Image (tube, rainbow, N blue to C red; front, top):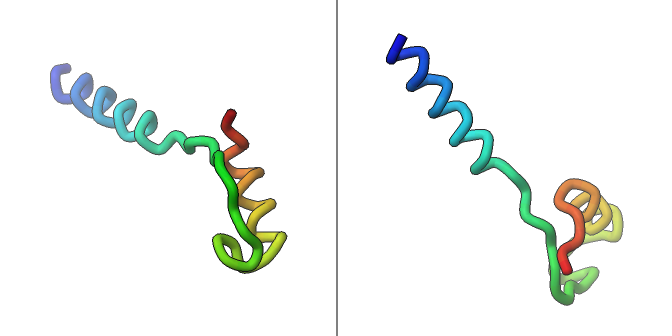
Length: 50
């Protein structure tokens, strides 16, 4: 029972650490991103912060 609980807790911690953080600031194309599609993909994946 304790081993199952430990596995569940470890899985939850790993899931929480994988949460993407929104991007914010000024970025350049080309520069920070190689193409407009790369920048859009990053925005779609991570979102935009305030």
